[in-house]
Image (tube, rainbow, N blue to C red; front, side, top):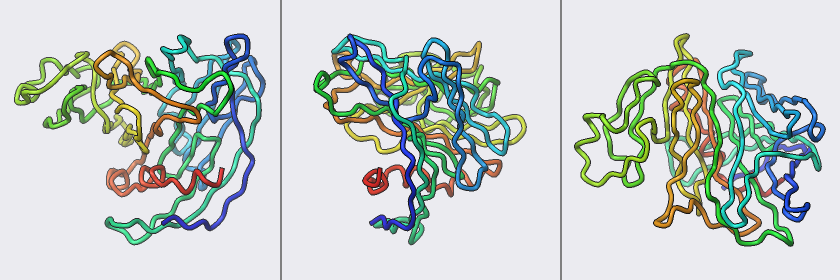
Length: 299
């Protein structure tokens, strides 16, 4: 059970207003002024990690992440497309802004440690000292009840040809041996290791599964994954080899839909764990903290 130690609130929410302002979409991060070229930042408790939110003049929002004042996730886009109603949600208005600090220690039912510290700064993005988590949220509202997610287009802009430890993007299995190549050398369709698996569905030769482990030329370790994956499909990543931007691709159902949701609802957390020491990636408890539901109860 999670036990609350300390928390302070200064909360923020962003809404996209569309369909003559009948549909309100919530993604919980900060935008300072609607349709202005603004940026805001959120630091982790020890200020080792900083998240910057960039609001573009056209209303689109990007985020970038610093580790020890070095930008390792370059400005990356945030968007999600609905099928029913049919609309692309990629432009945001400010409705309310805020931030809170959260600090607790909780005891897992089982695991390798007796207690886990859960300490982060939040706009929901959440900034921990070992990484960040963020997600899309849909509040309960009159004109949006049941809806279908057609596509999620979350970006992770790496900006360089890093070394990656990867398995092919696939809709049927993750039981592959790991490949160790540069991002530019990823080829899910021709991987010799993939031929050992009988049941497989490759959808893009540039696709990989999460968790994706990355090592930069200067020795920074980055792990991209997800947390609190409930009633939502798993996330693969498609690599743009010209820009080294990774874009989320969800596992579809038999008719090509990604998720069926009812407000209030939210996606899983998109997670980025980072350190300049490889063992700290393994030791991170950030995903366990994001899996813990008690922290959400204090929002």
